[in-house]
Amino acid sequence: MTISKLLFIRCLSPLHAGTGQGVGAVDLPITREVTTHLPYLPGSSIKGSLRAASSAQETQELTKTMFGPDTENASERAGSLVFSDARLVCLPVRSVYGTFAWATSPLLIQRLLRDVKEVQGVTINADLKALNKVSTTTARISISDPSSLKDDKDMIYLEDLDLRAEKCKNTGNLAKQLGELLFDDETEREMFEKRFIVLHDDVLTFLSKHAVDIRTRTSINPETKVVKNGQLWTEENLPTESILAALVLEHGHLAHKTDQDVWAGLARLCDSSIQFGGHATTGHGRCEVIIKGGKS
Picture 1 (cartoon, one colour):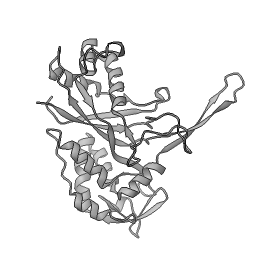
Picture 2 (cartoon, rainbow, N blue to C red):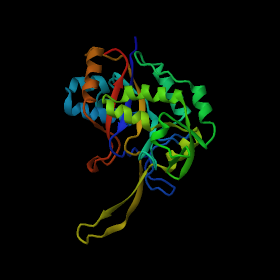
Picture 3 (cartoon, helix red, strand yellow):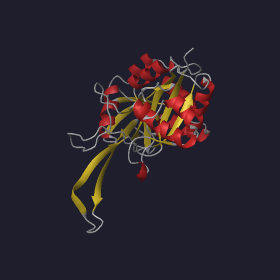
Picture 4 (cartoon, rainbow, N blue to C red):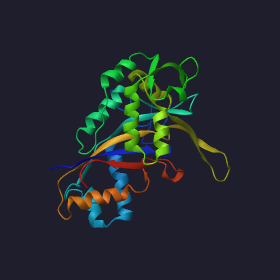
């Protein structure tokens, strides 16, 4: 029986998983889906980062079993673990009330529920019809605790958008379920539930383009102490507190180790934070990885 598990990735610092040189206003954009323009973390980046952590922590044999041989011997066999792209679940958005909100949309929840069906031991109950109903217009959002994020006129202000709040029991239930999966600490769970909001898909897409972390960077000439010629650029990052989810599956090529050894090894890797994407030396890409479901 193939084992599937769900990986939740929570950004503890800005994450830059880029596509190289951009053609727009941002010189170094992050990876985005062609159809939706939503940001994501490629499965190859997840696998590469976990492999690097395994090489430093686990035995060479177990690393080879989990992730396959090194590049020079890649034709020998595939690794035992297969990683999907990590897709967005919640985007942190600046808010006038409550500092920031964890924003999602019916599309993001629908995708998450589709992945959850592949995972044994994880259940998320959500009424997609209800979510679509409360977020059918860009002037309305649904939040689990309106009192923490709205003023007397039932308005919420996200970035440059002012949206009317609408209380929805289904959203509160969904926030509670996600909070229990993502956070062990009760205080963090309560904070997540109070800041969780559901937006229309179009609003979420707009915010994913215009509410991400944009930074201007330079390269300084060590002798003159001024910016090198042509070394001024902007780069895009997924902001701190972004939450993504990916599937990891057992490939079946377990030549030397049992599947229990493989999953136990992956769990050990995720006991501490993992660095994804670029700019590791400046502290970017530090993430918490939460494994849920499947048989260990």
